[in-house]
Length: 155
Image (cartoon, rainbow, N blue to C red; front, side, top):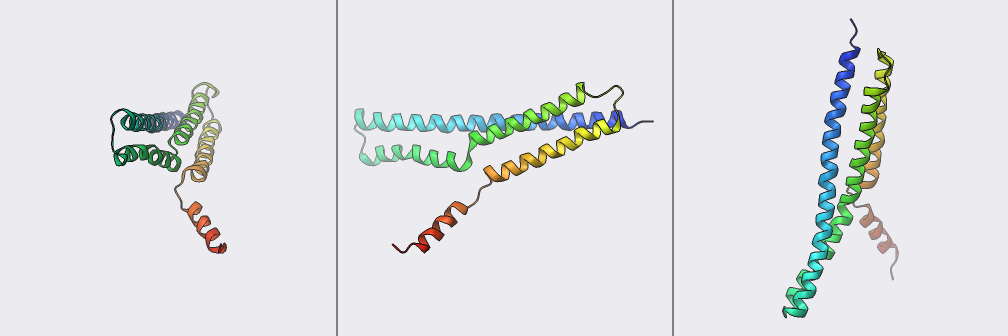
């Protein structure tokens, strides 16, 4: 008795679970990016209006005016839009594999056909992990390079 239908179903369930997971993360990161953008715009408007029309003190206006800079730093470090795009690309890759599994397998499927899709899933995971590490890992190398440059330049 062939185990191929069980392999197909198991791979399909894995793909479905991962698609749902990464799509959820994509949407969450996208919403966070939009929240940061809205916060920046609203804080700028509130600082301007408060200073011009409501005679806020310089400290209050300055405090509110500092919010966009802080939010921009958060956005630059966390890169929520880039993360959202990464999650959407991963979801698209997973959907492509699901389509291959559902619609492009021969009837009846062979073990090699299912293994090829599973192998491509592994390749997708590896490529996306490398991209994540390259673009979204938090590290202090920028600051380390800056400190080395400052140390070498006595002026």
